[in-house]
Length: 91
Image (cartoon, rainbow, N blue to C red):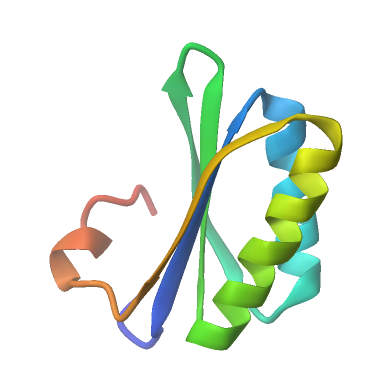
């Protein structure tokens, strides 16, 4: 993430909406998937990174696609995240 400007996170209830969401997000903009996590109780999330505009576009596309087949719990875009945040991701 050192050369990137933003990260985006989408949390869904269920794995299928996550897969559809991350697929749409990556296809919609020039972003890379950092990781996905199983949060618990059926909740899962994915993280993408790229420049701010690309991340915003990717998250919007991912949320739209995921919400068509399941429940989107939350979404978040963080411009210029701190170095400490980078250490929390499994790369």
